[in-house]
Image (cartoon, helix red, strand yellow):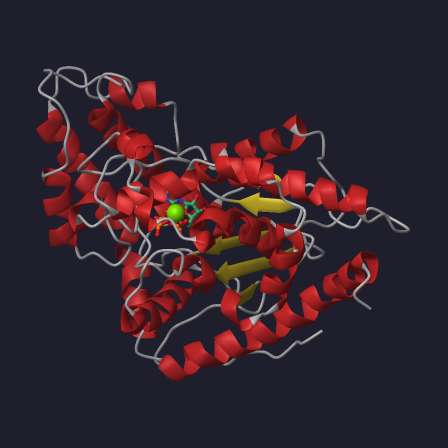
Amino acid sequence: MITTKLKRPPPFHYIPGISLPHTLSPSHPCRRRLFTTSSTAAHADLLNESQNGQRQSKPRVIFSGIQPTGIPHLGNYLGALSNWVKLQNTASASDELLFSIVGWHALTLPQNPQKLREARMDILAVLLAIGIDPDRAVVFHQDHNPNHTELAWIFNCITPMGKLRRMTTWKSRLATSQNMGEEDAVDVDEGGLNLGLFAYPVLQAADILAYRATHVPVGDDQTQHLELCRVIADQFNRNFKGMERLFPLPIQLNTPSKRILSLRDPTSKMSKSAPDTSSRILLTDPPSTIANKIRSAVTDSIPGITYDPVNRPGTANLLTILAACNYDNEDVQETAGRYVGKNHGALKKDLTEAVVELLKGPREKFEKLRTETGYLEQIAQVGAEKAKSRSEATMVEVRKRVGLT
Ligand code: ATP
Ligand code: MG
């Protein structure tokens, strides 16, 4: 195992293991919600695990990934990344954590090579800025570890086409990239569908299972893929029996705000790849941009504030974000109750303040880190070595079982 300790350059103030946005006071609700074990989010984790009957005393292997398709947005943060940090800070010493920047997935839609290069560095800087500790978690670029693609090929050969056809995500991704709402995804022009986009859930299963991960903190949009991952793991275990079951059936870990919607089209999720940049709040947006985006968020013309996700999805989305940022993820109906007799203006004003406060620390850290290219490259290199050596143990056994040794 590689134990290299990375030295951060002097201008960046870093306290190992402490990942809280330092500008927030200890009593600030954002800190309490996102980073303590007693929050609703922690309860959701336990619920997920016990629902699957797999609450374990055994060490967990926690894996997740994010595509370098742009700067992460509030949906990524509330739905997934904040959970990565919380898991890292509450994991027991024997738990392993791996967080990957999944460049091969980004290539399933057309990318500008220069922008992709930048985005890979951006995401790494964001992960560190929100509190991922590269001495505790393995942080790496997927494309630095060829074991992912090798395992994906083996999985391709046991994954039925019928199951992939039932995945709706490739349609949603195509629809989003064509500036269509998710609801119109059934009519999406399939001309842009390439083999990589169709098969990317198999690569995702390989990403997870290369490390025999047991827990996967992701947003709601990944549920179908996690189900497929379990099907593939089970199929491999049945086809290629050994002394023991090789792959675990990984559990999805959601946060309470597992699906944040687009600010411009509240029938679709907030996405990095959506062409309309005002549809998402970036973790690096300055306060004035956050204010403008929230001010122009699509709501409705119904007077007053109520939580009604079916008839008032835009308003419900703003309430969901506010509950996550400011009110310790209380029941969103309760958040709505705080706005009796008030209007959208009051809600948007409070939301702007809450989001600005939440993102202030991470944005400042990102701005410092992003200029430290050598340091980021060093982190990526160490992460790649750890990831390769960690997954090689799985691959040796896989090759043996399928008859490739
Ligand atoms: P893209 O549009 O390029 O697919 P994305 O915004 O969907 O980008 P991903 O990199 O695909 O982001 O996903 C990273 C993580 O963020 C995943 O765990 C995903 O489930 C989660 N996530 C993405 N969008 C949202 C959202 N709107 N709400 C909650 N979680 C989200
Ligand atoms: Mg996505």
